[in-house]
Image 1 (tube, rainbow, N blue to C red):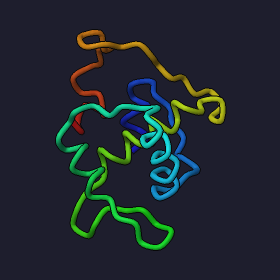
Image 2 (image 1 turned 180 degrees about the vertical axis):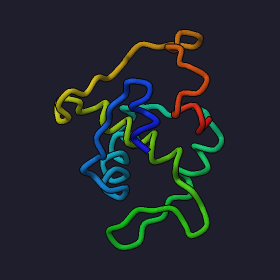
Image 3 (image 1 turned 120 degrees about the horizontal axis):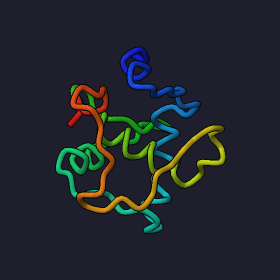
Length: 111
């Protein structure tokens, strides 16, 4: 939960967008070539597996969308950080230039 992040001095707010709204905002950015996704097989599989059910965009039953949801949300946020008060978006990290984090940082558990 949030306690694991707060232990490392990280605060966050839950998005006001649901997963369908995040994917719907992400799709035009991807189609317009404004973003390029990392070549991560699990991410690619999850993005390809998304399905539209009426107005909803979601993963199929018994599948997951943790990678696709996080990546899509980050891209949507990066395109409009001014809509999120206090948001800090980091740009310009190339291979081998990523900021370091403690081994027990909560976000490392998804890798």
